[in-house]
Image 1: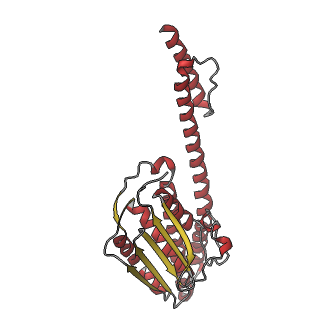
Image 2: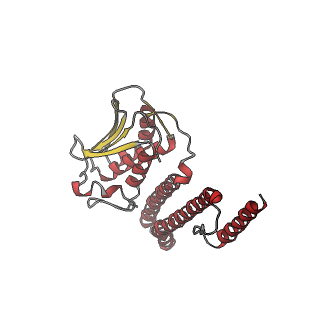
Image 3: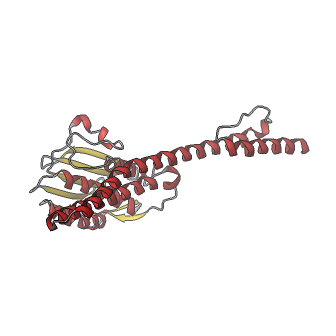
Length: 278
């Protein structure tokens, strides 16, 4: 027993000393056969911590890169405002600052959504019963003013009064919000956007009369920081990547097709038996 415990203590000291300086796996040389499972478990923990630190570094770099441009724009806008004397010029700068602030706020919201989709965080997210019809109506109402400002008709169509799925409400709202926001951005004045809720299987769709997405880009647009050739205005290229990650978490699939209005249709299709993945 003393010999076994002494070996265990030596390995524990090696693990403690090494973990302060490096997260690389420890060598199993000299470790008794009986302690191999324990040593492997510790090395697995080191690997998970190493992966988490790498993701944190990548996320911090992403935040710094994505916020640099809008914050610079806000700083320059404030300088323009300080130098403006004509009331018309002042109002124009204020409008630009308001739009820049909204874009920055949206970007921060998307980055926060990405942080919640980290594997170490999302495993503990509580899943509850979510009514897709209620969620679609609630999220759609928040975009009604933006649609009106763009002279776009936004409506909700549902084949049922309620449709319950298991999910994380805030993340599902974020996914739907990204789809609606994309449609509003790309749908021209006088266009049409429809949020649809249907069964068999349970699915949530957003279709529009915009330019659509070319077949050659239908996989790439779900990657982070990728924007299609038809992209207009400023954007981060995060919206559809977040939608894809949220769908994956809910064991749902994203189907991209042409809409009945000639634009794009994004459909989140929920699995029947698996409420959570990842």
